[in-house]
Length: 281
Image 1 (tube, helix red, strand yellow):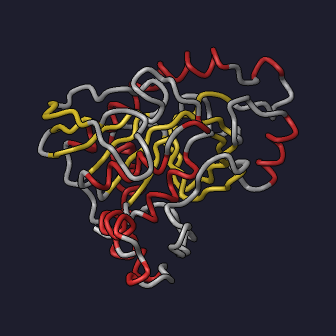
Image 2 (cartoon, helix red, strand yellow; image 1 turned 135 degrees about the horizontal axis):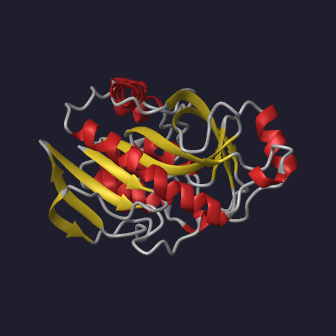
């Protein structure tokens, strides 16, 4: 089943026939919002608002573990996220869409990064953190719709909630990052730990602050103004995707834990057994 995680400005899915709204309790606390289960075309889908239904959660306040766990518990095996991003490349213009294939974690340790620890040791490979099948599928539909989209880029995730300094912006550029954002880490890595295929559609809202012209530096107001304008592209793209068959799931993602766990099942307590059963589905 496909799940959509809506970012800034995406608090519901237009065109989705709602079947039920679920309040999910997880071993890791409450998700950002209730999860809507519905149908779009021939697909059964799940929808979760990353920042909450009223955008009340800052990026470092989001309970990423609860979000991913709740979606997995309800049957998600593939996730498409929607995110506002800053561009660190001149050719990725504000209003363009982009799909990261790589991530650079520049957060500051305020976020819980993993399901594991506290008696369960695991080291999941994230050399290729994104589902290549989802990325190609999204890019192909964007091309058919003549929507400008940049695939296979690198997303640098910063802590926030403040916007970055020019020195930080240049550092991320020199580190090989093409986009900067605040929310995809640890979301992308937790999805891999939950054996879920994951990809993000990033909506470029600005050039961050690396350009010499101060008039082109990012402000919160400019982010949201352009983001609202660009959401139509993303929702058009989503509608096209959901009218088509889903891409195949990669077996190496759907079995990621089989090569990652070091702790034997016999060492799990009853609660750990229960939530590990969900992650292994």
